[in-house]
Image (tube, rainbow, N blue to C red; front, side):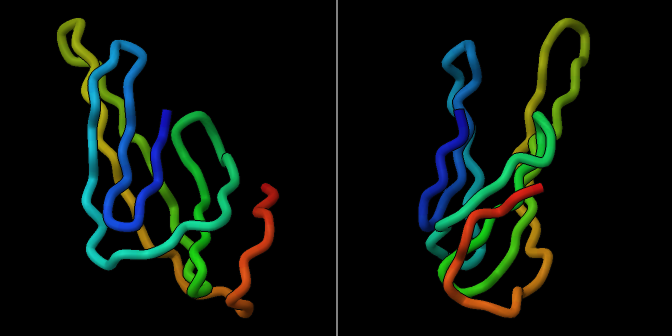
Length: 85
């Protein structure tokens, strides 16, 4: 499960482990679209477009997950609409 907050993005693993990633600049996410099982496009109320990625590594029977949020740029409208991919 992915949880989007104004200052933090969090992921809850199926095992119940809770991971969080603080955002550099607080924002209000208002739209999202799934790109793959580990990537999501996010849009905020200010017209910015983001890529949320879950980097998953398996090392010696343990799974390591890292949350990454990258600003891709600004879109031409500020009022978000659904993201279709």
